[in-house]
Image (cartoon, rainbow, N blue to C red; front, side, top):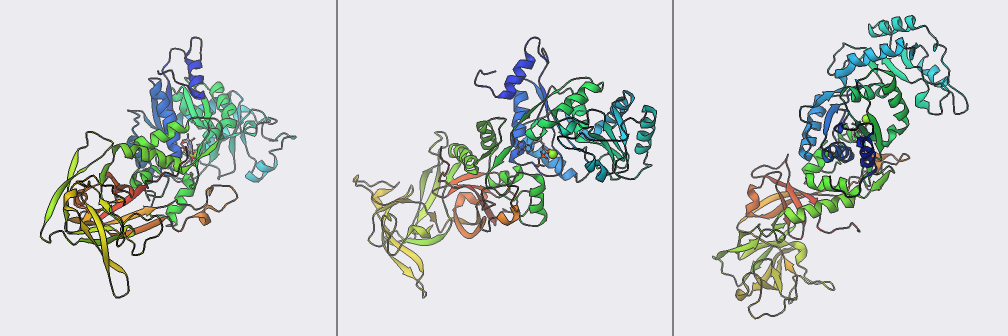
Amino acid sequence: MEEISKNFIENFIDEDLAEGGRFAGMQVHTRFPPEPNGYLHIGHCKALIIDFGTAEKYGGICNLRMDDTNPAKEDTEYVDAIQEDIHWLGFDWGDRFFYGSDYFEKTYEYAIELIKKGLAYVCELTPEQFKEYRGDTSKPAVSPYRDRPIEENLELFERMKSGEFPEGKYTLRAKIDLASGNFNMRDPVLYRIRYIEHHRQGTKWCIFPMYDFAHPIQDALEGITHSLCSLEYEDHRPLYDWVINNVSVPSRPRQIEFARLGINYTVLSKRKLRRLVEEGLVSGWDDPRMPTLCGLRRRGYTPAAIRNFCERIGVAKVPSTVEFSFLEHCLREDLNDHAQRAMAVLRPVKLTITNYPEWQSEELDIENNPNDPNAGTRKVTFSRYLWIEAEDFLETPVPKYKRLYPEGPECRLKGAYLIKCTGCVKDADGNVVEVLATYDPDSRGGDPADGRKVKGATIHWVDAGNCADAEVRLYGNLFSDPDPDAADKDYISCLNPESLEVLTGCKLEKMLADAVAPAQFQFLRMGYFCVDSKDSAPGHLVFNRAVALKDSFKK
Ligand code: ATP
Ligand code: MG
């Protein structure tokens, strides 16, 4: 392992692996336990990088476990999507794919063990009474059923399992400490009755273990050494350890907590994201504005950019909100190095080079990627009629405007020729429909033969006689409020009504006609774009802007 500065989790692991440590001589074994009730989002990436990445660093292994302990709202659609997303990020669990529900039988046996040891009892407080008897910081909780004899507990638990009682009638509780300052230790519920079909177990069970009981058992049965989870489980760690110490599981995993990732201008909660999908406020889980992995992928994010982002924000115990612009910055860095350059005119106006022969056309060599010496060049055709961005012409220039206007400065058509604007043609309503210019035939490639200084801007263009049409989608933040996730806000009302702008009739360099997802390009001066994986088809090209060129992130 590289001896660069380690995060606190790695420091704990080093301690555990050292001679005399808790896991001396053992292989680091972690797990990623998503609940299959939605698609993975960028917050999960942080957990994935910590779970899979830490195992990788130590030459260890990481399991993928679908946490389907809670029978509600699970779907194989989510199970499949979660696997696809993890593979896309570049992580692999080998043959160690599990379901939490596979351990229901074992978990049940451990519950019996606790009852037999006098460490669990069947309680019959109603949910209302349960709240009422919970006590407070100065008053212990109460359960009149705490001292029920072991035999009676065993019999009642058996009858709970065989479906003799309605939901809510009985629970199985751990016998720990009703006066504990940590409310999770005040005889927490281990099992409850639920008459609900489980997506894998069907109707086999009507009692289901609580997460706090099931999770440590699942970890221990899989031989996990380090159970890495987010900070909200910190107060549950005493219970995690209590379970591990009191049932005869084959190993003793260690739970370590880290801070969740928060990003501004978005929400990171499957429940909240699901509502956006269900209410049709976005086009689906993979809407390119969503912070889901499938959304980011469709938007044009690369695994390298996301992994780099998660690695650079680091692992800490203190919660923090990271700027969305930093995620964009990481994407820009990756695509700046790797994306093929192309020319695309998003809001076109026609440009006619009046001294270029009507019948003529020529091929120019243009660089594919100035940052990649091996990227080479491509042929782009040039002729009398071109498309340019409407904003690259002004009939009456504003101060400091260095693009095309009548009698304005000489401008460079990227990789082609120097031109001077001579005027324009307008329609009956006064709209500019054609810009007129002359070119200098001695400036092929874009540089003047006599070395004179070019005062105007370099602008991009597309050959009108040899181009492709496309729809281009530009995205803004999904929310206009920087903190839509705040507890006191209705996040739906924070949605940004201008988060999607659809441009049609865009004009693209001909080679883009054959582009298919996940191809990515830098459209000169316009940003980084990718082919939309869902809606683009031959003859109906659709491109998404992944990120604009300008970097608003302040280092
Ligand atoms: P959500 O509220 O989005 O449903 P969750 O924690 O309930 O989040 P799980 O499917 O249970 O989602 O998460 C799997 C793992 O991912 C857990 O270990 C959890 O701690 C971690 N995780 C979830 N969200 C984040 C986040 N924003 N930052 C870091 N880790 C996260
Ligand atoms: Mg969860």
